[in-house]
Length: 105
Image (cartoon, rainbow, N blue to C red; front, side, top):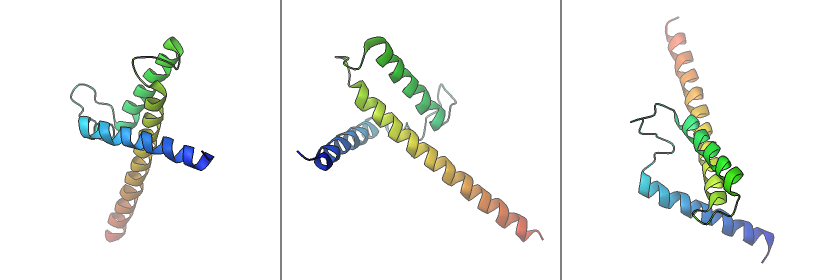
């Protein structure tokens, strides 16, 4: 199997896993419920990534109870999405703030 095909297969597996979990948990990764924790999506995902890295440190990559590597890749992709969403919000807030300030002139 060629590199491109192997890569596409792995990416599809991770995407399918994230979509399945999103259906199970709702969009809690990018829109935290904030019932117990008040952390935003970036902070929540960073904590989950820390947990996965600690699991790898303590139990190794080959933990029979879960696929830590796939989970870690998934959380990193979700973190990237959360960062991009936050940057977009900041950009929009900046445009709105600028538009409002020019209207007052």
